[in-house]
Length: 604
Ligand code: ADP
Image 1 (cartoon, rainbow, N blue to C red):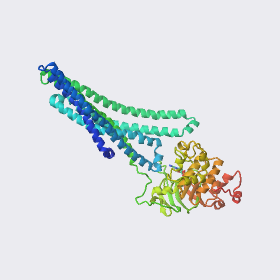
Image 2: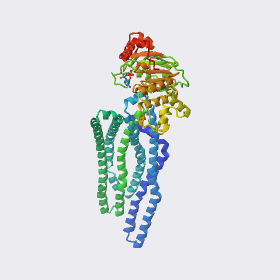
Image 3: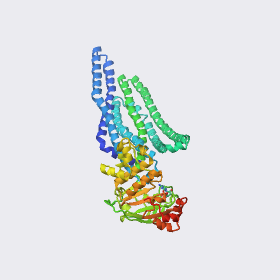
């Protein structure tokens, strides 16, 4: 409960800067709702003092009526209309501004979450929080925060008028109020819980849809359309059920509050009519009190609708703040050092690592007692069976994850003591699957260095063997490359990512299976590009094809998370170990291991 109250108070902090708009909205709202309250007073006056006044002549009655009604119309135009406009416009502005800030903060937090966060949460479900939860929260300002004041003021004014006309009738009119309070209380928690469920199911559905759309090629090639449709219908069914559960409570809320609103005038009519017959009230009083019932019960009914809005918005806020409260696993230490220029010595000192995003019991060590050193400018290759921990090893250098024991140092500094931004800025990663964004080729090249000069861009592209193909695109560097670079071939995408890495000029380079998914011609072009890219950078290379790493300064052979052999290509081939085994297996059909020893295949 306190946590929920805290979330509300935290949200108010977003609204607070825009209090002038809210105040304007409330004042507008009070005008909008109180001005019409003079209509029953005018009606009452006209009935009792004009129409039923035997002493007045017809023309006197006509001119009195005209004055009264003319005055009311003028008030509506001059006072009511600006009030109504201000109420709508200013409250929306306050709400949208607060939400603008909240959305910005949420996205800021999400962008800074660690890799494990994105592994735990599907991207579609994160998107659903940024968009649909935020929109729900907006209603809290748009209606809830301002309606409370407007409706509160309207109820007070109505009651003043009503009490002044007849105290007993007003008390009767209020007789149903305790029921309202009871219903509010009972239904609020149910609505909030079911809204949470609806939002949760929406996020799950969005996550699954996003994943399947992104992987539509696999869905098509495995002809899984029917199955996917079934799975979607199951998600949709769950969403339907939770939406209907919420609708049940909302309908109950609306029915009960609506019913009480309808019954109250009948009770008043009964009691008030009796008062008129007894001569305790005039006809004008009776009509005026009856006319006040709607302005009295509308805000009360809105209070009960507010119940729903409030419950829905709070459920959304709970989910938004639950993300914002998650601390990234990997974050800057208080006195993190900003690296200006690094030399490039990378040391793994007795490193242990296991993935914590897995369920308890499945979190076995992925790297154990790993020791390794890369001197500045050296090329260190990682070799080993699939799943032996090569990608994990390299992902620890830019701190995509933090080690559980031991340390990784760069130029003698523990990477956990280095400012994350400056650490990552000095490390370039080229992965097996090139990641590009929609936009032009140039946008993608400049992604890490928006202020690079045209000369630098050109040089980077030439070095990456990307210049000619980019120039040949329909609009050259300004060609839109599609989502994920879809309009380019695999080899072209990879050369673009290499050019992007060149432009950033990192001191440490990580190449993770860069050429494995490519044809021979693309591989040749990329190998040439990588050769240039690696010059004078400390480089870690993971390569499935061992022919690509024979020239490495040091080869680390990993098996089951441990380094079981290390040395140069020649040294490793002299031992009867895993490396020689892997190497000879790759070349078994063409050459024997000894022949390879005499004539090594040099690619780097
Ligand atoms: P390699 O690159 O040698 O193929 P990886 O470093 O990718 O090996 O994987 C090592 C082990 O860690 C494997 O058992 C793999 O299943 C597991 N693993 C890899 N990435 C993750 C992850 N993000 N979350 C959980 N487990 C992972």
